[in-house]
Image (cartoon, rainbow, N blue to C red; front, top):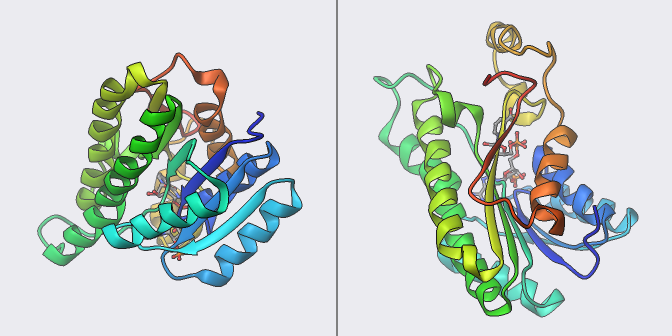
Length: 247
Ligand code: NAP
C-alpha cells in the first residue's frame, strides 16, 4: 500500500500492534507520528525502525486521555509534517476483573485511555481533515467489544464504545472525503496478552478456528487497508482480524 506524502498519527505506537502499524505505514512511505504513554525508549526505537524502512518518523510522549497533551501531539505533528491525513487510535489498556469486584477507578482509567483518548484525537484530526476534504480514521476495537467476555466487562465496554464512535463519526464525516472504520482484533501475541494466565490463553486458543494467535502484523495489514486511498468507498465498518474467532 502506498502512503507517500501522507502523514499518519498512530497512538500507542511504541509496542505491539501499534508498532506494527507504524512500520506498515512507514513501509508505504508515510510520515509517522507515534505516541506512547511513558515508554519513550520503545517509542524512539519504533521511530528509528520506521525511518529504516523508508518513512519519516517522530516519537512523542502523550497520554491520549489528556486533552492538553493531545493538542500538543497534533501541534507537534503540524510543525513537523503539516496536516494529519491518517489517524489510527490504537492506544489501549486492560484492567481485567469480574464485574462485582472491579474497582470504579479501573473503569475510569480504561474508559479514559481507550474511549476518551480516541474521541479527543478524532475531534482534533477531523477538523483539519474536513478543511482538506480528505482523511482516514481507523479505530482499534476488539472482538470482546462485539461479543463480550467474562472478566473483561470494563474493557469490553470501552471497545463497544469505540464502535459507536466509529459508526457515528463515519456518518457525520462521509461527505467530506473522510472514512472512519474499526478493526477488531481477536487474540494477538503482544505484551497485553502475554500477562494472561496459561489457562486463559489455552481457553482463548481453543475458540480460534485457525488454531493460532494472531500477530501484530496480521492486524497492521487490515489497518493499512483502511488507511489507504484504496478503501475510499468503505466507511463505518468493523473488520475482525481474529482467525475466525467471532464467526
Ligand atoms: P500493548 O502491547 O499493551 O501496547 C499498548 C500501547 O498503548 C503502548 O504503546 C502504550 O504505550 C500505549 N498506551 C497505553 N495507554 C496509553 C495512553 N493513555 N496514552 C497513550 N498511549 C497509551 O497493546 P496491544 O496488544 O498492542 O494492543 C493495541 C490495541 O489493540 C489496544 O487498543 C488493544 O485494546 C487492542 N486489542 C489488542 C488485542 C490483543 O490481543 N493484543 C486484542 C484486541 C484488541 P507505552 O508503551 O508507553 O505503555
